[in-house]
Length: 87
Image 1: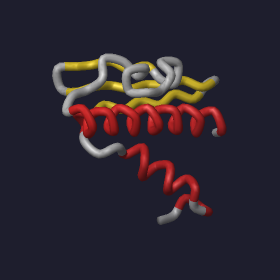
Image 2 (image 1 turned 135 degrees about the vertical axis):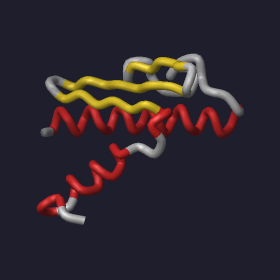
Image 3 (image 1 turned 120 degrees about the vertical axis):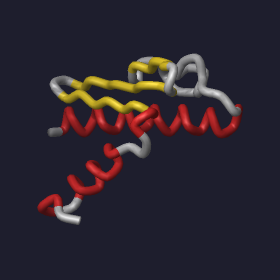
């Protein structure tokens, strides 16, 4: 559970850095390092549709594809933080 949360947080942090870079520069960064975060935070890959992020912490793994729209990952983390996982 903690490893999964770590992977989720890594992907969210990387996404925030990428989106902040895009907002400031009008383009996607070539790497996470260009976006101002360690390339070790997550795997980052440009795609024809946008970009993909993935991170692994122990047995936890998290992925995000910008082409899929708003990250369900945010909603998932919010629900898991509430007692009983209820909204």
